[in-house]
Length: 350
Image (cartoon, rainbow, N blue to C red; front, side, top):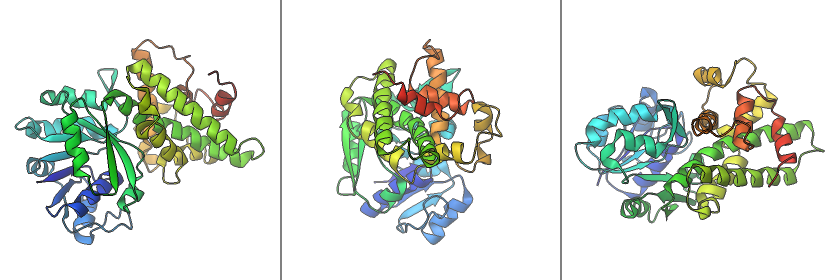
């Protein structure tokens, strides 16, 4: 049995490590960055994205995407949403020659022909033979902790229950416990929105430093509850079908770890919006995304916020529709000040 991981960032590397620790066969991981490939193969460590975590010898990195996928039975796509469509198009020539078991762990939305789409919607559009066959995996899972073997719970969502359990069984006996969900849309929307809400938490962090007499633990819990409520309401507007999605790992679980953990890039980004005035040099959200290299890291919530705003526009939902995702979008687009997060929760209507 061969397993390949497409994407050698922190999350892809951590998933690959868990599987390579379990299986004796080689686990293959694709990296488009030569320095990452050399680091994994020569030093058995991803010094760029998962520093300090020793990787097993049977975890082998390659820069030949089609070669490693062609050798595999199970494929995990773990690329940032900005690059996922390009990767799927490259994979198409291999994936359509025979059926693989395919899982996607990318969070967010992707816009095609002015229509924001979920990750699975995009994947099924490119890989038509995989309609209703793909498994989407999400949940509260900081790569640093997964790489260390910390006990973690994830959700495997798919319209094909048997395929989902193929992936669930792969992780049996590891530090990752995985649970099945049929609400593939709800899981995807939750995993995208939580990154947006984590930016709001970062903004609150810095506002707390500036005014500790106004913001405390009560305020954080208030923001968390509002975030979870807005997550559920937005997802149901988009067609999610199971309220339990938002009460378990993909919803409240992932929201909690993303918003509260010190590891999160989205929370860091929110802090720097206030503490470093990081938005100052950019004209709007499009300018920021086009020049994302200037801030030195990629907060997925930034991309997701723009996609949600475009999605609302596509669906005819007014930009005045009150929800935290649109508040964060308008902050990133320089239509509102960061303090709008506090105003929103203070005036929240349940």
